[in-house]
Image 1 (cartoon, one colour):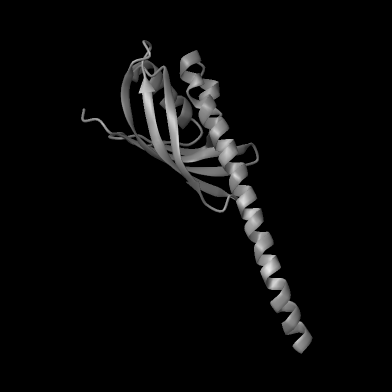
Image 2 (tube, one colour; image 1 turned 30 degrees about the vertical axis):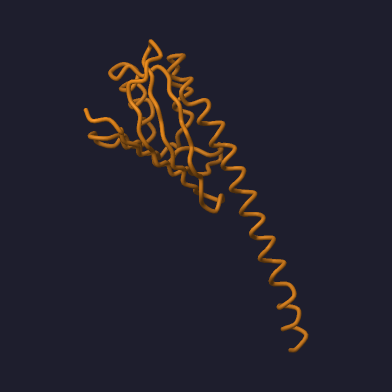
Length: 153
């Protein structure tokens, strides 16, 4: 019994360290995937190509914009894209990620700031966002996307 306790006492720190390194590695992988996705996101509006935009989202996503009902489910990204492109006039933008946190296994959370530009590359809106990302068989996808403007309308 004494040998078992000694083994556990010696092995536990190494096991915990390995688990911690695996979580850090998973979180770093998620951060890299999110940065890549964010770099592609606004290309959809610049090119007028909704397929680029749709691919950023999980099939069961929710997009929660201010003062509107949530866009939910598989058709949500296309519906949101059409609204943002045709009604709002979004043609480009920028994400400024402040933090990504979580265990990196199934879900991570991203917080940051965003900017929206029109066809003349004029900044017309900016604000903050909170995105819950989900690891899917197709990679990291936006699962819950919530944002609000810093401007009074």
